[in-house]
Image (cartoon, rainbow, N blue to C red; front, side):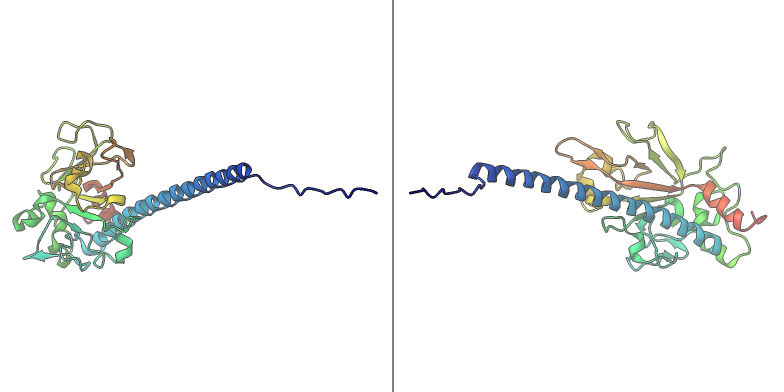
Length: 257
């Protein structure tokens, strides 16, 4: 009598199955991490686009109206003035005045861009005087054939002017008058706070505090890891210089200034 042979069906042992699941988990985690990193990169690119678009819109507003707008202090997208002077020197971008949508003036993480202008723009006397950088924001230019500011309005090579801003270069130990400047004499600064937003900025490392403390200095560094307890710094800064203001206006109105 012949014995019937029994074929055993090959299968996974528990150890083999555990190894397979572990490998799948590692591959999945790596894929998700790569996708997350890619999404963050897209958001930072969106921030750069928002800053560039807002700067261009401000300069285009200048060409048409012969002045730059004041900040929006009420959140309605319109500049705020009292007796022609700006109510504040730091606030939201007046997106409706410059022809943008609210979505256009948000960074890639959904925070509204900060719009900071010359400190003296709240002074009616400074606004009226072309020897002050505040005259870039004088609304009287709209009703005149020429803007209030002229080619000699500071900052210039011989006159640094007053009430403007400096952006410190990355990598320095501090941000003050003695620091190396990436930008200097900026009548306008745009700030994107990115991931952590502006709320609670005063309680963060000095790099981020510098961009919300109300003084004349800002810190530009791009993404940079800080100490373990501080996490990271990712604010982005764009300035609008007096040269850009004048040259942009002159390019569209030759021979006016």
